[in-house]
Length: 131
Image 1: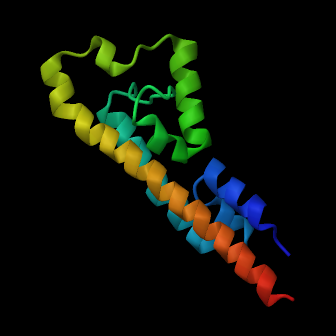
Image 2: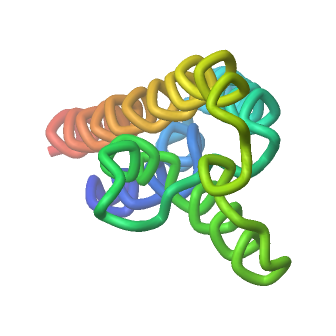
């Protein structure tokens, strides 16, 4: 019997891992690839400098849904001393690229919240069915 809390935490930390944990390997791979593709697309559009690991940015609350991926990107920005893109880009560059780049990252994070919650439900249903 799989723990629903472990499925939730695993699913939040790494997209699709909660489903993989519950035995839904195909779903886990599909979720991992699709959410990671959206997040990487957002990072690439934002010049790899648009992760906001501070509660003063509203994007933080959606991006944190990407779990370890967001944490790793923030640590990489801190270690390399990379400034967030809005601190160095021109206004025209920001207006052209940032809304869509941030949107990709935020959608990936919000989608991962939903996928992790679904992994929780799957584990809970499996536990109920085994009783």
